[in-house]
Length: 210
Image 1 (cartoon, rainbow, N blue to C red):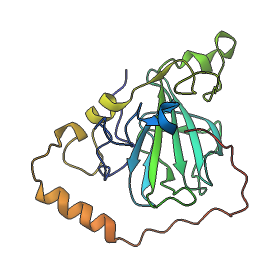
Image 2 (image 1 turned 180 degrees about the horizontal axis):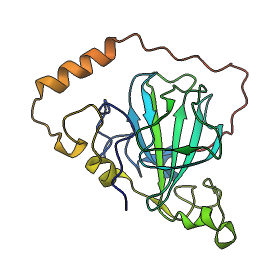
Image 3 (image 1 turned 30 degrees about the horizontal axis):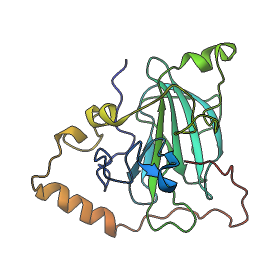
């Protein structure tokens, strides 16, 4: 597997690796009827979303409550859905991307107080290489409790090992120990005037169950 980088240029503002957090994968939703199909990397709107590895864009589409999703096939790594991005997407289908390229910016769902990158990882990239061997659609609502394709994988450990571009260490280096440098950065991020165009309130959505 190629060494992926973290999909944001800064650490997330919530600990997605904490299984008690709603941002973690497998967190129960709707009273336990379904589970969270990815991890939510909380960040300010306008934060760049970076390609984790070299790859090719498979799909750019409306996703969930006014946000969009970018699906990228990363050979050797799998397929990644970068969800809840702003409609101002920076790539198009069939476009080749290189590791670290900005492919979009973090968006915000309609009615949500927090912005985030919703990231899903599908480990069996062969489904897209040869679609006849499997169903290439990622969302398969008949598959419970995740309502996703059967090769949906937990990206937590991969993300924690992935270096953050522009940050001196990876996410795994974080701990509960106070880190004044990180605290200053988080404070700065909260005060920066990030701006992202709001989706048209009449935009149709895919009504994905995330």
